[in-house]
Image 1 (cartoon, rainbow, N blue to C red):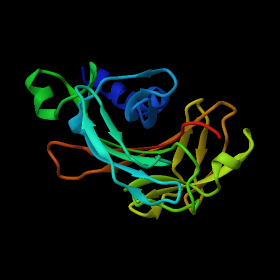
Image 2: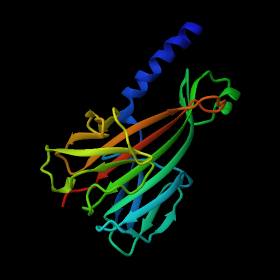
Image 3: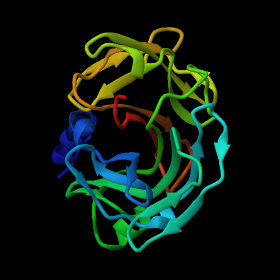
Image 4: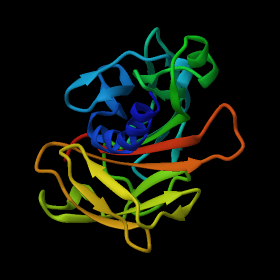
Length: 238
């Protein structure tokens, strides 16, 4: 059993990396009667979720001004409305405790898993951040102050599909150097010493970019690390 456990411990990081493209995405999209906070796989499916996990939703005008919104928590999703057209929206969601076990990933705490007799490899807490551009926003390159954020340094709506656009990756307002940024079609780019990565624009109608950041914890019985994921989506090109 110890041999099997050691093998799994070696494989878990590789499996997590390989599954990045299949993890849940988080974004905001326009609906007939407002806007929807969506969770699932962009362009493939939208999944149900607990609205209580969505801790913050903000909307912005084309000038970058924060807008007043009416948030509505439905049974399995969050929607919101605004009297002013929304050009950009941001979301913070805390999905909670997770454990990797010899029987796969489980959505529970370490203590809950151990009570079920599961062999826990590690325990973590997952938080997602999303920024969705529905229309161009000015000024380009301005952070909205999210804890984990992807900032386009050029207006992506004005770039020819296939051209490269620089994006800056920020955590707590500081650039993250040497971090991986991914697109929905599997492209992977590393940020430079200034936290900037140049990513080719999708030739489709939209684009998804995301990144993950892990913070290891010491002397915690309940958690081994925190996982933060940030998403940037473009709903459409004008």
